[in-house]
Length: 166
View 1 (tube, helix red, strand yellow):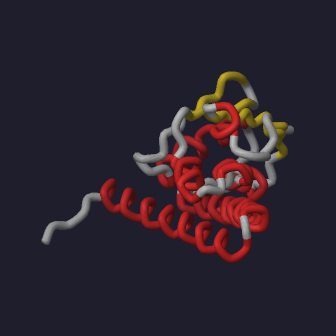
View 2: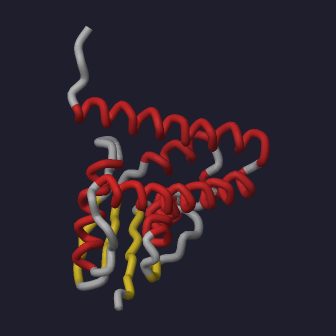
């Protein structure tokens, strides 16, 4: 039997976590329907994000995120921790206090579409990201808002977060 290196271990844990997340969604969908399931998923993802961000800053030895520079460092290091290789998205910081996310392939969209529920799905991925900023007490705006699935309606997905630092 061989041992897993750190990257293989992280990939396995992320895949297992996302499998749990997808199966929770599927079984809830069967019992409750898409409207209720999507709402619960949004709430759970956002709440998880608030907890996750606090755990990540403690693990990284960061006391507070009070500047845009500190936020960019947290996002870069934090995404290295929670992002699996199968998660195909890019993020950038095109201007001060702005973060841009973009993807042309989304594992969540693909999974929800296979379940036959994409028409009523509201993106849980960006709810999780928004939860990070909620948990850190950072004021922000999201454009476009977290409604529906852009991958489904437009064929690509993006979000811009604009932050208000003192």
